[in-house]
Image (cartoon, rainbow, N blue to C red; front, side, top):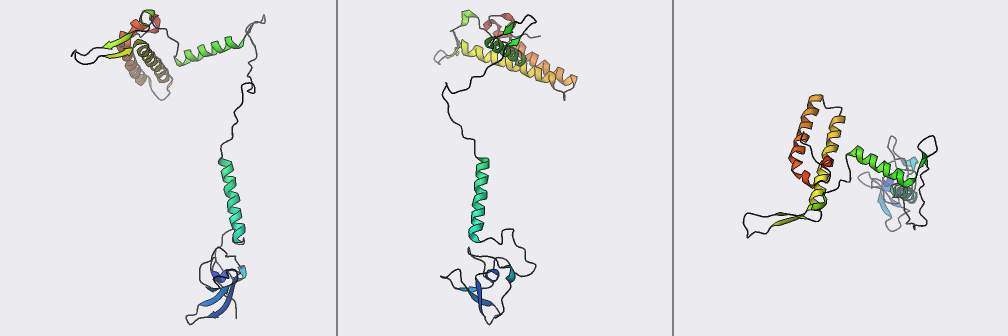
Length: 232
């Protein structure tokens, strides 16, 4: 009996398919030598996990995948290897905790300051860098007036039966200094913005100046008047 030709992933194009007969409807029937528990099969049935392509039975012009010639076991092994490579490629780099004595010590080389050979040690260089960064970002360690340290701000409602609200002055002062520093950074960003024209910068800076003027009421908390707010 002549062999049958079928498209990819049909029993008729599998190397395990054996032709037995053709039924009344013209369908090619046979059996599978790879699946002993299910020997009866039709050529037009879809392939099972044991499907293995036989190109001599393939219908001409049929599209087949790149791994069509691999056995099911080889195809599964290839899929698992590709999956493992993908997992390893996206896996986080393992980190190991080290003791203090194992941690590397970063050393800053001494930087000469003048022709006489004077140098700056590591602590002095860190202090200078911190001051430069604070000045560039508009940040500073602003001291509060000593008379208000440890004090409280009490907001008493008009109704004496209601509980008053208390807030530590130190907390209030830190929030005010934070607002001041952020306004300074915002002002620097506006001045450096290239997409804003001169009129837009002037308008935005006027809003910031208004915020400074509204916050001048808290200048009494600053130890140095120069650290406070200026309304102009």
